[in-house]
Image 1 (cartoon, rainbow, N blue to C red):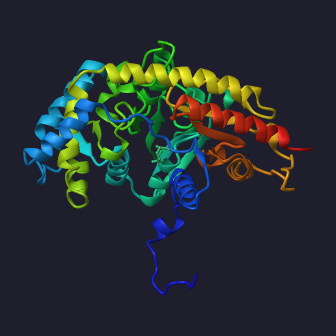
Image 2: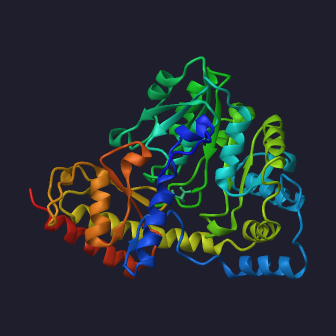
Image 3: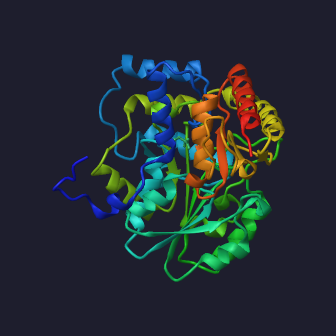
Length: 405
Ligand code: GLU
């Protein structure tokens, strides 16, 4: 491609495109060519949005709720969001301390863009969701990636946190249950991190709770502002309806935090996308305040799939997978495949090669762990029905068997 005479913004030029969307796009391109691909790549529930929520969206259109809303969201939705935080997270939230955005990603983007300056540091435990470091990069700040390997259950410890904090640290990003590992922080693990944070009053915490309702084996969910109320005035707790209510396409995320931060995020959003889709806001209200059976049923379905998938992955030659406690991702080590050769004669030298091999030879799309900051691993999203998951596992095992040394 010819180089353009026009220069890009330097922060954007240095940022990487989203690796998850990269795979999603590759799957779409292969399918458009008529190739049969089973996608274990996109992190989105395969279920339909619950009927009463879809009806609320249709009803909003019929009643003419199709105009701009307030930038930070309809007051009725913000009150519903505040009630959700009070009911489910023991956070004493007033609706003015909430904001509704176009997806959870915009909550994160708003918060970081509203507060970061060049030279500021953001601590991100690795593996991490692909977009955190790139959003930090877009804001001109620096990510401090702290490797949290399988030994610590892919989780940040108080020692690792203490060692990463400097006078430039502005934020710590926590994500539990985690994308890509499914790791869940217990109440006592969060308390240990909170102890460190109490000694560093300038460090803010962004708690990405988007997988809150997907915690398995009755382990229970905790969030840091709940377990340590003394941190409340410097925590942004974010969530959304995408994963809990199978509403990824509706694009509704929300958050609560100190009023100064919420106001700054609203100011930023008011010069950008303005309020989220009015129709989606009405649907989100129905999701958060209506019957919650769907949440329990989908959690049980995902737990059942997890059990099946992890057993299958551990039965595949060269793969090894811990049992994830939440979300709908398995993060499997593919170290045992590195150095092996595909039937087409290609030597697998990295997890990216493994992902390409699985796509080309097994018709299965996954995402390489190194995109999430830890290799050699593959992330497998098990948000698909039992029959497709069974086919995918058979193909993965067959692929592993066909490799030679
Ligand atoms: N969060 C999902 C994933 O990790 C959706 C894609 C994205 O926004 O990265 O697959």
